[in-house]
Length: 301
Image 1: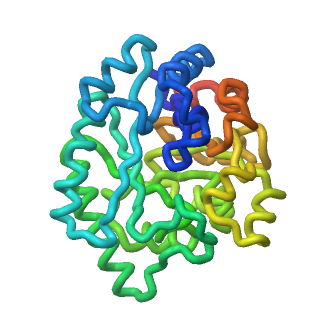
Image 2: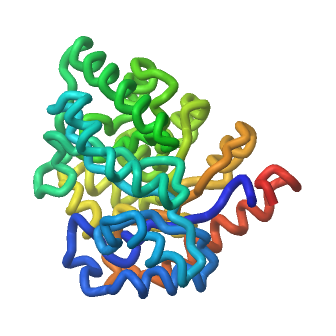
C-alpha cells in the first residue's frame, strides 16, 4: 500500500450545505466516475448511508476505500461528555470501514452556511476561552484515538478557527492527540500562507485537503465582504491545477516529513459551471503527476 493515496470528497458532485449545487446527482454517479478516474477512496457526504455496514456496501462494488468523514461538532457550546455521546456512532462508522482519521468541523456559532459576511464569524475573545476550548478538544481527541480514529481538526471559513493565527493558537494549546487537517484553500482564503502554515505545523498534520483558489476571486470576496456561500457560488475555490496555489511546494514539505495518509481533492464549486468529472479528472491528474515526479521511494510507490 502506498504511503500517500489520492482520494476525493463528493462535494465536487453535490454540495450538502448548498443542495441546489448538484443535489440531483446520485451518489453512485460520483463513485463510478471517481473510481474510473483513478481515485482510491472517497470521503463521506450526506448521500451515504448512516450506518457502518451500509457505507461498506455502497463502496464495495467500486473497490473504493472510506477515506474519512466530516463530523459537525458543537464542542464550543457543549461539554466533553455530551460531545462524546454525540460523536461515538460516527467514530464507530469510520473505524468499522478502516478510516483512521475523523474530519472534525466546529459548527457551534459558525456562519459557514449562512448568507452572512465572513468578517462576522465567531471568535474566542480571551485567553481563558481559548484554553477552555483547547482542553475540551484534547480530551475529546483522546476518546476518538482510543477508538482507533484520530481527530483531524478542520480549520474552516466562517468558524472559530479560520486564520493562520487561529491555527497557531489551537496547535499551541491542544495536546498531540489533536491532529490537524491541513486545507490549502481554507488556509489561503483565511489570510494565511499555506506553505508557511504547513511547515509550522507539519508534525501535527494527519490529513490533507488539497483545494486550490483563484486569487482574483479571493480578492473580490474580501473586498466585497462575501459570505462563504457567496465564495462557493462565485468560484473562489477549484481543484488543484486549476488555480494559483503551488502544490508541488506543499507536497515537498509533506514528503520531507514522511507524511503517510490521504491527499483529498476537495473544491466547493457549482458543477453546472465546473463539470464534476472534468474537474475531478484535472485534480487527480495534477496530484498524480506531482507524486510521480517525486524522488523514487518518497511517495511510497
